[in-house]
Length: 135
Image (tube, rainbow, N blue to C red):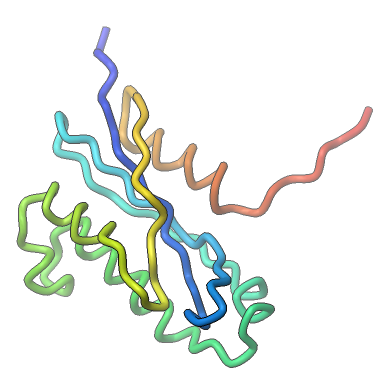
């Protein structure tokens, strides 16, 4: 049986008005050092973002979120950062910054597959909560 991998993750946040420090979770970045895994997934809730700032520039936000994915995947459109080793890319992406796109603190867990961890964290931390069904 495959051993568990240690993974690190951070939640990607959109902070439309930095001075107000209000944010919504918009994605997740997951890195598994042993397997060389680095991926991001995004799920921006436009209505929630516009509730925080009706003037939010959605096109710019999507462009920045797409850049995170490109950097994780090492694609040319990710610029010079996308060419760094995968752990350097993860650390660059999760560095503290005061901008419209920020990340949470880095957290650690165990998984069998990075893709499963990415999907589980996205479901738990980003996607809208599902109402409880009472029988």
